Length: 129
Image (cartoon, rainbow, N blue to C red; front, side, top):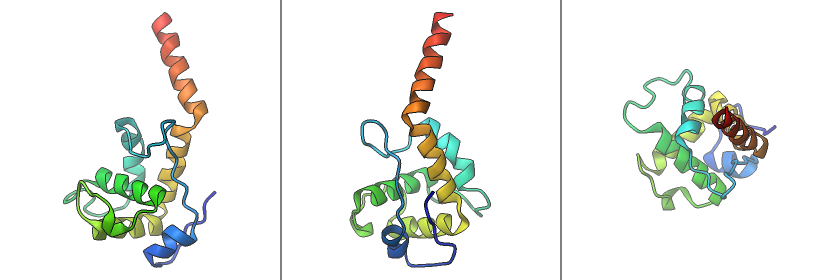
């Protein structure tokens, strides 16, 4: 389990002082699939006011996952929606509410080799019936 701060702290301490591990796909990428976004969207945005009204929250989460996994500075990241300030605010917001940690745990489960194998096996089995 990962230690996430419960108090407001700087973004640098969130990313650098706390070991946030971003689960990767087997090919090494971290970008969300449509299925993964459907699974984490409600969990991540739980209790958030005006979620997604102005900016695409999936794009913001993708940028945060890329930033954390690559170590690229906020201002050097490429953003499909918003900018580095929006991404930093979302990271602080989601971390403070505990929804980022819960979303990353769910992504770890979805991206684990056991889950991928079960999905492939169940699909293959249903096609044989």
